[in-house]
Length: 177
Image 1 (cartoon, rainbow, N blue to C red):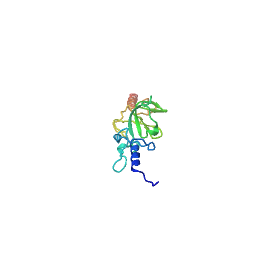
Image 2: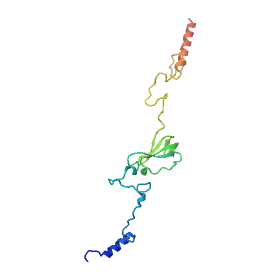
Image 3: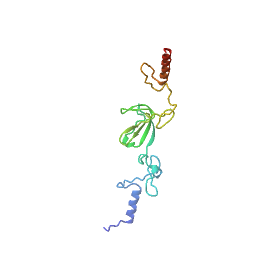
Image 4: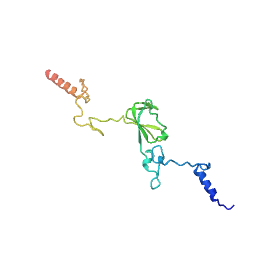
């Protein structure tokens, strides 16, 4: 045996491979029409890397909005957290899921291990029409809104009632003099 293959035998082997008659080669070429499309396969750019627009947001460290979610019925059903890392839903119907209370507007987000709550409903949206770190300003309160600690013998519980009661007591005291 010389280690060479005859031209006719090589030709037959190549035809067998092309026609799929070789069982020891389990190669099935991918349909190139599926390259770079949803449900297909990722292509490579000119540097032999997968373009970032073909990678899931979660791989890039971003979160991905999936849609709205019903916390009472778990609809749509949340996938396993380990395959949904970075995906989140906004609560559309409040409820309790896995012993956690969700309100409309909260998020449920996968950290790659478990689903967690992002609480968007406990924050005070505004105070006196202002947002952020609110400090009381003139005009924020009326005299009826400010608590009053009355002097002995007085019954008023707010500043306005305290002033009225004080004037009444002064008038009463003047009438005795």
